[in-house]
Image 1 (cartoon, rainbow, N blue to C red):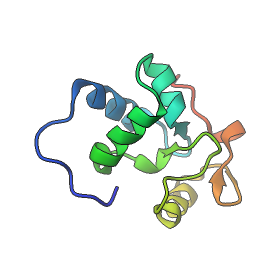
Image 2: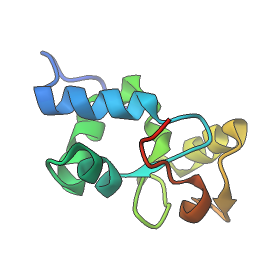
Image 3: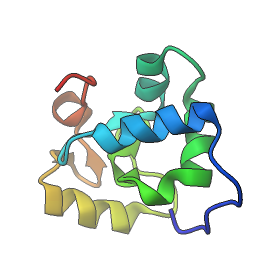
Length: 105
């Protein structure tokens, strides 16, 4: 998300987080906590750490705070992606009632 990728390889936990993020459909979002709950391990902070270190190669704009706000410092880029994908919005945040993805295809 704007930072260079760290050297080395993602941890096994990071790999499963990134795999899930890659599966979030265009126009849908999951919160950091949704991802941790879906995976059954870690928590929102751990997911956020994975995204801050390794999220540049996945559709990071589909991962938001529980209230639908984008990652700090990436608001305009998120809005651009969301508009391109048709993500349901409430102002400058994702409409979590409509846009939240439950992990089911």
